[in-house]
Amino acid sequence: MTVMDNLAGEQKAMKAEHGLSFYVETGDMRILFDFGAGRHALENALRLGIRPEQADIAVGSHGHYDHAAGYRDFVAAGLSCPLVTGNGFFEEKYARNGLKATYLGTGFDSLFLEEHGIRHMVCDSVLPIGKGCWVMGGITRSHDFETVPERFVIRDKDGWKQDYFQDEVCLVLEDKGELVVIVGCSHPGILNILDTVKQHFCQPIRAVVGGTHLVEADRERIHMTLRTMKDLGIGLLGFNHCSGELLRSMMAEHPELNTVYLGAGDCLFL
Image 1: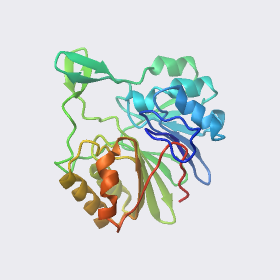
Image 2: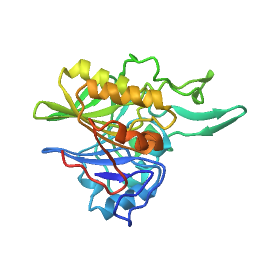
Image 3: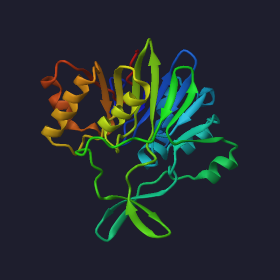
């Protein structure tokens, strides 16, 4: 269930803003994956009948505001389950443009979790969170053309450094011997993520859902990405958020992939 996206689906009561949040239900688990940029994500969740206090686990894909800053509102509404993130989730993240730097971070820290009695679990590689459910980080870089824009930086005690999004994690679900991969923004590269999943689990990937960060990609890179997904045997791409208008317009050129844009309020039953 798409709780927040840049666009609204057919449910026009949903609020849309630059951000992402999914609510995932499996046979045994209720997972809140990302939290949007602010209170609108919570308002959408409540409108969809989601009760934050019933979530079994929360996952933060990476430490950018449009995926993380809404977390505080969910906690205020009763979310108290463990939070899983990658290592470095709370680093000071910015977008730098010449002399100007814009803060892009989470808007909360580990002290906030301690004050609310919330357990913080860090995933460096593969972390089982339930039957047939894993959080996966430690993304390996196998596709050189999947680069991170230089404007994304981290500020620490030594100054500025490039942000390679070592904190980014994805959610992997197993169903009938096949995998569903749910991604937040795919800053390390969507194909790098899928290769890492494939190499670890050695199982076919049936579907990919979420932000692919192809918003700045040209036609050649998008074609290459979609062809590689086809070669991996992926049959369904449910994309949104940072995937970009060009990807949406090119879908008809790749009929071998079942594709759908997931706006706020849209659901997939897999």
